[in-house]
Image (cartoon, rainbow, N blue to C red; front, side, top):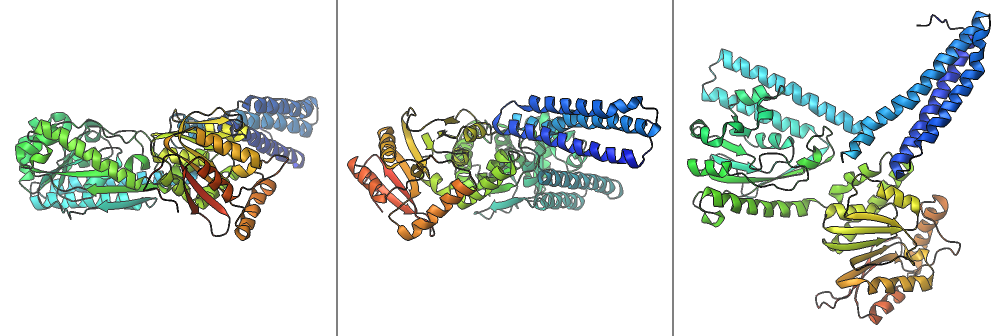
Length: 583
């Protein structure tokens, strides 16, 4: 653009420009990552340093612009244009892309983009769009060249749509699918099928179940430029028209063996909570004397959240519940009463399915997304740590699903977040003396009012009353007197029925204890993830824990967690319970 020509000298200067551009971009990205990791606002200092560096370089080389020799002037021009360009790119483009791909998304509680997530999402979307276009073309061809009024042609078209939706769901290999059909429902008999609604994927899940299904769709789906034509050609019903205004048309399709699919909530939910059921589906079932088939859907809301395009790794489960006959008075007599009774029955079934499905392993990816882009070492540590801990499944099984939980020595908060994901009714406080770890834990996008982290010396920390206190791999950082004092303090701040979970190396197991000492050496001395005092580590004897438990009249259980280390888990329960026998 400037009419400059390369020569042997300014080519060398160009290499310098590119090198400075790399450095500027890395400095800005480092500042963005540090801010994203801990929330510390230090990006402005990075930008100021880059501006000063750029001005110094431009001044030093740009003075050659006054030289009379064209080669020297070209060096100056390339330096001025190049340094200004790379400085501008680093100052503007890097933060812009970081905001679009990561920062702005997590502010909305969406997961940040990754290369894999972007590829999978774009591929699935393109596959879906192409399939919709082909189905639309096929529908018009069948409509024009073979009378679409023939039931065989309509059934053929519905079969194509059903198989296509099945292919869309199963081509998404990053999502596991499971259909629970204990009653062997085959949808051969017409019915009103109701399902909860969390994601656009729910529509595909329902259509793939059987060809002879008619969906009730909202205005957005009916008018969609991508698949609206398919919906209209397939005789789906616009819910905006009102159920009572389309009974004759629906009855005609039912007489041909078709079932009707309705999402009684009317809209998608963001948090997975099942909203109030509208009465339309139950009114229709009463008017046409049809069975009701509830289908409980779990996992679609996580895999593709409402309002988001990212297709996350996960698992989708469909549970087909037994038919509810028109004469079954156990779930209400009239359609209004039946709406309330079936909604209650549906929520109970969903809660049971959710409790079975939402194990710590289910939330592993959610935890991972909270710690990516916070440094590769931390991400690696999180992956290895959670895998070695079996995603904290043993702790999840022991910690009460409801109540106040104190996690002492929480580190970056991996376990605290996992326990909270598995039960939002756990009010969790994590405490650690490492301020940087606490800042990182507090700056995760999944954190909200029921999970908090504090940096403090635990010996000076002001305790409240708790239903569970966790001391996982932290007592050996204290000296023996402090260990006993802290354990007694925890016991004194338990609610009735509360438990203290102690997991630490048992120095009594001499052979296995060598493995524990070795792992702690790597953690504190080699990798440096954990800090120790000048006094070093001090591992506790299991006899000390038993003696304290007996002194305070606590029930105690012991669980040996490892084959190669001396890590033992001691569960101390405050209230006597005949069924809580010591092991």
